[in-house]
Image 1 (cartoon, rainbow, N blue to C red):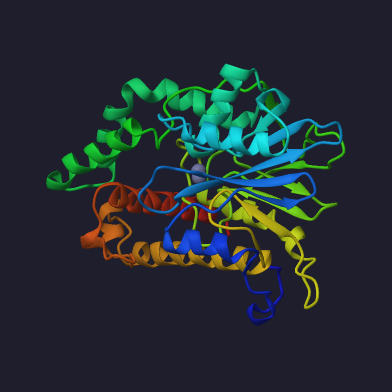
Image 2 (image 1 turned 90 degrees about the vertical axis):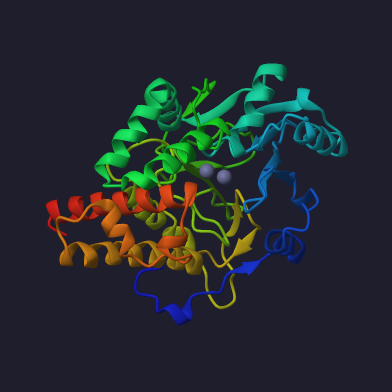
Length: 362
Ligand SMILES: [Zn+2]
Ligand SMILES: [Zn+2]
């Protein structure tokens, strides 16, 4: 939301390509790789998941010296299909892996990072990641040996009934084993800092820190071309998960502040000017940044208000008891496995966020 702008004046979210929108909505296939600007290509890379996000949107940029830079290369699947898809795109543009000057990864999750690690290992392509996510990955790797015990302790603190604990412990272990949760350290060649200008000759791409989804999540902004690469911070159809890079003091607060960080770029939208082209990590390219920021913020504020309301009625209730009294789309009693774990984690994060706001007198 641009502060002060009434909701009905927000420019509606508009997909820039119906084919991309269909692929996301219907799950029927993967959109084609395509040119989306001068020296700029989009390469959808399958995630291998049965549910959205079914593919990661990877972006290839050419600099004025002919070097190539790849944003969020995607999953490195066991069959090597995504490696082959990247090679095919490079060949199409008259290049090869040898012309890759670097990869830039918005955050530590495997569906953005893993293929970058392959390119680093096999082709010596420098990998750039925000220093806070390199640090977060190191902490996750360090915590890995005690992960099962930590989960058990957390379920206890949350007041999870005995009969539900085993299934939740299994769900947490499953996430780690499947690689959804990062359990290995990353060795980035370039550690990015807030507001840093990327070394891409002829392009003005700047690091916009957007912590919340993970502690070191970044967006990339080009104010000349009016392009905003949002990674998993802002997506056209999903509300990104929060606090998915290990424990942080207030992931919800970080995330909400990171939505505010997008507002200067939303402010340029008018009735005749669609403003920034948003290039997300999943879904499809879109305009209507202000509306999407607004919708996403409202979703989280609503949840915070719900948690505040149940806490007001029962201040000593456990996280489990809070979560039971909150509205979940599927219904709390129907939540299981990862979804139940995520509902409890969200409730806990909102409670922490509310306590911090209260302590700060907001
Ligand atoms: Zn992610
Ligand atoms: Zn992702």
